[in-house]
Length: 222
Image 1: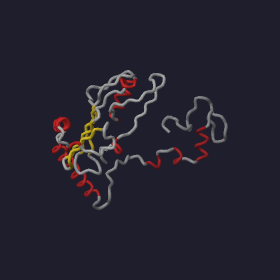
Image 2: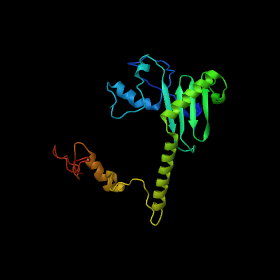
Image 3: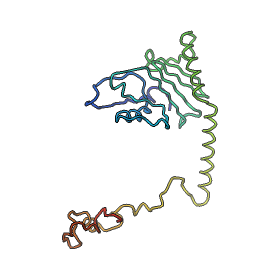
Image 4: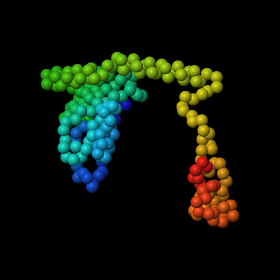
């Protein structure tokens, strides 16, 4: 995993021809924008008690575009330390505790071949320094890294304990036996078909009185 375009950029298509005209939005957006967008489409607003980084994309769909900043956080497979990204305008800034920082101008360098983080140009260096300060204010990299390692050690301890003696998976297993949760597993197929008939019939195929739900598929309590 990396924050290169080929790895992280995914097309987002929204079709609502009754409300929005077809257009191409060039601003930066994120999958985190999907929830507030759906909430906005039904005329509601997200609960302020549950803040999220995403923003509604409805203004973009209506033709009003404004500069957007997208933040990316990756702590999964393929990296040994938190890997963070800031995308604003043509710029993409990537930082990690164990790797050199990266800065790309995607308008001039769409294939991300020139890392401007090492540039000596004063204007570019100013952009780079501003992104670095913003990242350090937004993320406590050492704390995040330490919390990830602690979580890994805790889960490793649990796994070692679960694999001793009789193996017990830590995946949730409901108490109800799954083999008996489906109607086809508990009764003969002929009985199932009789219960599924409408109007309902008895074992001899005779129609039962209306309102008699017993032994019908989906009957309450059965």
